[in-house]
Amino acid sequence: MRKPMVAGNWKMHKTQEEGLALVRAIRAGLSSHGKVEVLVAPPFTAIQVVVGEVADTEIKVGGQNVYCENQGAFTGEISPVMLKAAGCSHAIIGHSERRHVFGETGDLLHRKVHAALNAGLDVIYCLGETLEEREGGQTEAVVERQLNEVLDGDVKPARMILAYEPVWAIGTGRNATPEQAQAVHAFLRAKTTGIWGPNAAGNLRILYGGSVKPDNAASLMICPDVDGALVGGACLKAESFLAIVGAAADSV
Ligand code: 13P
Image (tube, rainbow, N blue to C red):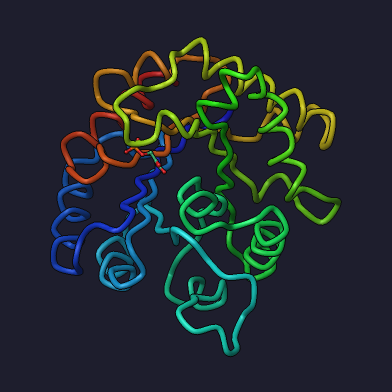
């Protein structure tokens, strides 16, 4: 039985003070402890205060991005060792904004995934097609390529979470339908079964991301291969984030 995860990607939002207020409200309102793994990914500047606030809870903290080296002359970057030492348990890698706004390539993402795993971070690896790719019938080919970009014999499935985030659904208010999400998740489950075998792939969590809101979360969460959500806009308010956590809990 896969325990769903609901992860909030705060993106470039929230000062320390605002982040603290948000995570306090999440903490206070969380009633489904145990059923759902809850993670917040604040901007780097707010990680420390958020980690302090959730230290005695089950709420996990992740980095939104990470570099592929542990230290060195890489101005502006944050290393996996730094994230781990700051109290993060996870790193989000391959988010479409990293791929499309910052031009991150498959080769770089491969190195990032390995560096994060080596530093003891679990990885939430994002993948998803653009609208043009979907309309051109390329969805499966694109996500398969993105999966193959980072997986090799060193990547242990127990430390990986996938997040299917169709680019056309991110921040647009146009979520994938449950049928569209389920179809891609089932495809990813089948592909990872081929790589890792049925047990490991059966335990792999595949999150859906892209305009998840309180009013569509339940219909997405009940899909058999949707194991939670990676939430952007709706995670910036405790009320809507908690409603999505509640929908994930109800799907168990
Ligand atoms: P939205 O929920 O704002 O569409 O963002 C999704 C996302 O990119 C989460 O990583």
